[in-house]
Length: 321
Image (cartoon, rainbow, N blue to C red; front, top):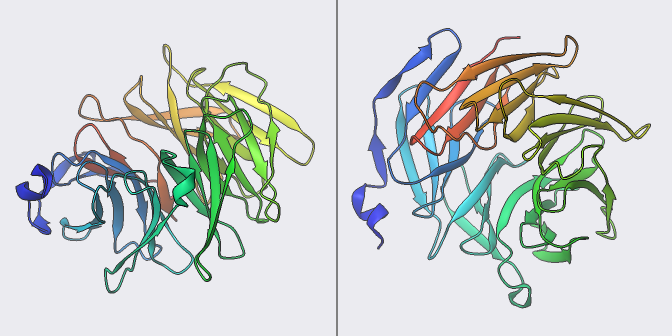
């Protein structure tokens, strides 16, 4: 047993941290030392999940009480991303186990689907479900893949241009897109053949890190190197680009809420940023602690959630739009 698991029990009660703005922003302490990475909230809002990257766990927060529970995921686990699957369960990309992991919400049972041994470690990153019930995932060493949980069929493809596949998401029409951080592009995946078609953003060497669709099927991109947020419309091939406010922004993640407002995390500003495409304006929500490092955000109606990997906290912004 590693030091992390020796330091805490499976279930830990924590006090709620004082919110920076009681009307909008609230913080929740989670057990220290786990480097909380990505976060997701269930549709009913009764649980918030995060990946315990150091220690190999699936974190569960009850936002009504502040109680946290951590489910060990297995030997060598180092999870990166977590999403709510169409079955209501937690689906996790686990770089340590080089596997897709499911945690049953009701039973807390853990199921592991390892990648083919011949593929080797791919530094698994993020996942998304297509409309056929299959989960697609990225690996930063230069791969993306697909698992059909119903059959156990797993396929992995080498990415064009090699290293870089990072964020991945599914549009309302069912298309799957991923971003390549090292490859400086986004790509659409053919759901039948697995072939990836590269689409070049207008800014060179922009560091496309994560992608998220809006209700119109446009693809929003967080650009790590350039500090931009950009949007691509596959219908006409067009692009629009905006630079985040402040000096030398570092745009890490992107999430589009149910009102088509665009949420971003800016490591340089130590803030979550909301962008309104209609008015082309930004609103910043700085953390009340330095070094927050909020990674991927996910949400439900009226709420966006993230994990402050640098402060051992989860954060929610209740926007009520």
